[in-house]
Length: 291
Image (cartoon, rainbow, N blue to C red):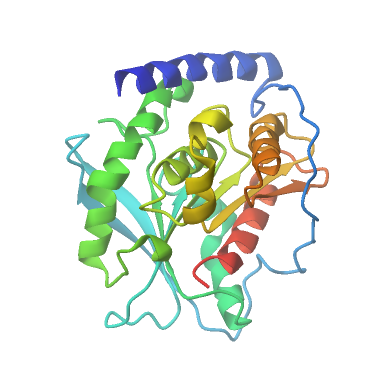
């Protein structure tokens, strides 16, 4: 654990230095890797716009005791339309970026995207949990957020040891890996790849949207190629073509291609590091899981 936190501290310094060089919102330009991308298919017009006359899901805030952090922490939860407490649901854990918290994903209107998908019959019913991936006593996104990078590594323990058990106690959800997915944007994308591939007994579906430099190297993410082929059901990524962080995703895609591991990487045309890309990621990823 100490080694992991030290690694994240180094990452934080590197990201912060790049941010300072590029200006607000920039992460710096990283080296590029030649890789074969999967075909980009444009999302339909209005996929992220509120549609009248359809059933709507609900958003609620929950609080849970974190054993690893030692505090009560918050998460935002999306419940699908016509939620039935007597029905079992799969769960998608959806993670935010380094400057966000448990409400950052609301900028990407996940409730509207999911409501529209359900209205069109394109997604399996699921509960979406949007936690705070900064596992420290003061988990607010304030001050120098890049200095909080070690807390994003520490979230692994909070997620597995406290949040997942809490969700499985509060809601009627499946508790096996085939009904559990993890995905995230930027820093949360790196967390999702690290935690999802690192715990394939917990998550069968893994997604990374514009994953940040906290992403482990492919050799660390996938130390056992045969095991990954057998146990991972979906490894899906997207990154904007103008995003300097494409390196993190393309490096993993190249490794997977070399070793015959099924892996998707979409190169979003003219995409930058923003919710235009991340909403597209959720729209596509949600249609592929739990089916």
